[in-house]
Length: 397
Image 1 (tube, rainbow, N blue to C red):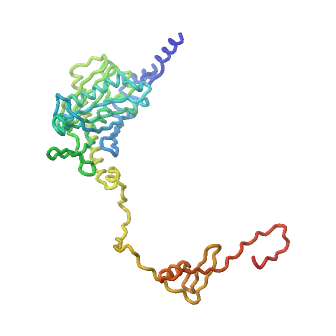
Image 2: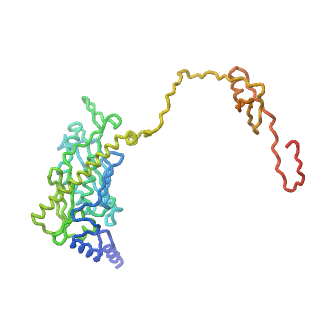
Image 3: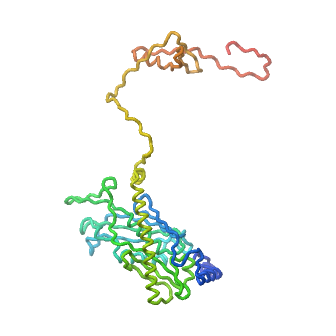
């Protein structure tokens, strides 16, 4: 009885994919009136942002409140026996529990598996990355590229954000340059040779549309709550050449051929918008990396300030032995003045103050033993007692 009680409690616990009936009716009534809860129009995207890190291949994409982090890395491995002249590209997707309470850590959910299959179909099946360019030595060594995508925040439109993050990371990534001289293969570091970008043949973008009122109303880039209450969704991945890389319909809503063609036309328009955003972001990042301060920081070297004042060049004598220091002898009116215990200063008339160590250095330079002369050190003064009535002081004080 106790186990069944907790099973029912876990089954009916509130998650991000749970929504109240009042909120559901409010969203549906707004869609029926031609409005959306966040104030957007039906064919309008949320605010999009692409951020590149200092390391090549590190990208963060923000689509509304949905955030996806992607990182591309590579290593040298042996090729597959059936493809000795081709490298490999592996895609991994992780739905972090901090992105949504409905995501669990440790095992992939049904949504994660479905998203990963659509990402692989978008890039791998369409051969977006030329694997032949990843070959180093046929049958021996090839590049193995790994693409890791992490969902940080989930508020709908996961496929659009993940595909945009993966494509941005692939275009932003640079692999080390490989030099072959006879039988010697040399992998140069980033400091030795300019890295090489990946050979991306085309750029696919994903657009998700949600259907309401039995398919009569279509909205682009639905939020999480709109995805929950909608009748069905259509995921389209298309490149700038108009080639469809992915077409997946989710839900039981029926679509006519004319409606499907209209969705493809809308997807192509939104794909052009995403392509312009990505091209501008890559151009801005390349321009920023031309800055010497940024380039030094990326390379790991200490960055020099561009506006720092340049000091005049100093000439250093190759002779390591310094010349002997010559100091003029003290004048007749010189006097030693005590500054306290263990210190004394030499006063020479109108010439100002001079340290008494100068005489010692001059004596050492002439080969004579150094002599230090100082005034007698006075005894410390005694503190006055409050009970003492006499104001006379001891001459020794």
